[in-house]
Length: 242
Ligand code: BV8
Ligand code: ZN
Image (cartoon, rainbow, N blue to C red; front, side):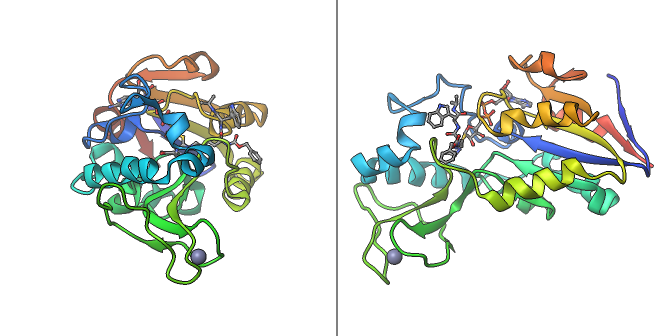
């Protein structure tokens, strides 16, 4: 396997997707057939879906909370936390995952682009999103204690804009002039925008781009390097840091 050497003049931006949590026992999105209880995920994970049937959406997220709760980080998550410890501010991790496993693994320079499964917010008032590990019983829609509005998962649904501050944080890191850029995508099919466009931004800035994925995602051709394999097995030996 070709390896990546990061010297003192280099910074590393990593983008992860559901594939990095597969070995922790969390199903990927398109591993199945992109359906949940015969509903397309894009439908359930959307503001329209929540408006139409909030208790169906809460059943979807409560099941995922219950499914993800016992899962532990795998060697792939731990390798990325180690890279951050060695690289400091020359490292940034942007994840599309909502399972929180990167934080459990010790990653701190972390941008959760699509929100967090174990955080809830009010769909009506501006109260702060709060930690909530509850898998709500079938049929319930939790209500806000302050305004009576429906509570919702603090997740970016399809058709919803990502948090501007998160995108700026990634943009600033990409745009830095002080070091050479390496961009690595791990365990993502590159199907969901705007995260799927990060590789183009990195290439336009002259960055070196790597994809680590179990199968040649349909966007493998957009990367300079493609390492096929399971991230838990590949990542620990892939990167050497000076
Ligand atoms: C936006 C939270 C605009 C939900 C997610 C119509 C209207 C509006 C927007 C659109 C539209 N049509 C298209 C769009 C854009 C849309 C989009 O990209 N749609 C796609 C489907 C075409 N994007 C959006 O809607 C985004 N917002 O555009 O807003 C806007 C702008 C301004 C103002 C208003 C609106 C929002 C996107 C965020 C959606 N939310 N998640 C939830 O989780 O419940 S996305 C969801 O997909 C997850 O976050 C997931 O991470 C993500 C991407 O999937 P992947 O992570 O890549 O997972 P996948 O299963 O696909 O792939 C896994 C890969 O791993 C595979 O390749 C597999 O081979 C590999 N693998 C498996 N095992 C391993 C492995 N690799 C390594 N090791 C292993 N062991
Ligand atoms: Zn409220």
